[in-house]
Image (cartoon, rainbow, N blue to C red; front, side):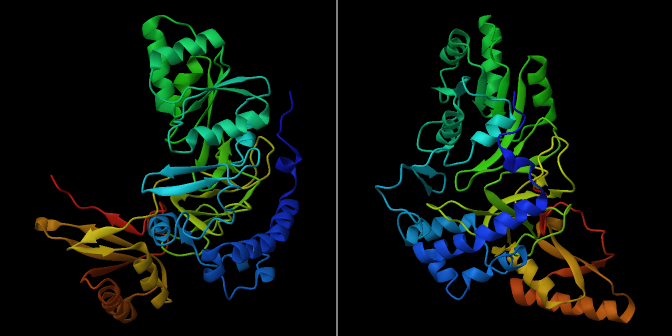
Length: 414
């Protein structure tokens, strides 16, 4: 049985980076020329010069939460799609609503690689329990399974008794869907007294895949792996038999940036996942997912040589409402930019005596008179930028938690 989906997975880091950076200027030029949004957002950018990660980091980040307003202003995709109706295959709707296009190419969402890493092979029957109604989840996994040479049973959600019966009678080899629904199906099988010996593998997504859940599946003879994918981007990263983080897909460039900014962070620091795709139909450049993760150092023990990330670590959109006014991560980032002495900042919101209060905790190398002057200047900046009064506390460099939070809502309501 082959160990890797293709030779791309084991090329050297230098080979991969050279390939990605050679393709990047073409994708930026394509996005500028064929989408209204990037035509305007990157109007003054020389696409040919965007041939390094440093150059890419100078481009603006388009964040997922902006799509709702963009799509309301310009139908149907906010000026982000390069392919019109008639040449697209399907259109989906996610909560928001946010509409997503699907092109006609095989494995358009790049799912086959993740399925292969999870043990799926040509000839397998795949039981697909993602929803086939409006949202793209089921189609994302189905496209990859078909490209891999599998056959798909389109189960969707609900009708658990019939689903268990189908798995048993058709001898499905693998499951795709959420881990919670797989647990429901297995419990229903126990209740009905139906054995499912053919079901030995699973690729799950859409929810956190916690170790206790993974271990419970293994006891039943099912090896479960997770994929990190979104309706906008397809597969971003996937788990391998090494169980050592998620390996980034070969078809994207992933950056981890400080929330509220577009500034890349070093390996190990938690920040927002920003992705650039090479998709011709929906050419998203520096798309901020709103998810938090961190880069893991080194190469995966499985031999795949691409960057690894820790997986989903929370949400980067930490907007909070204080005394009736919204406070955004971008505002905290603006305060940090105003003061070169700062390394990092975290705005903590509390409500002592049921009254909202803000304290900006700042990592800075300043003490004594210089520290007092900096704290006073920071109080002024906090008020100028947020239009709210707050306190400032200076802390030692490296003392703030490495969890990606720039706004911590610590208010208690009990």
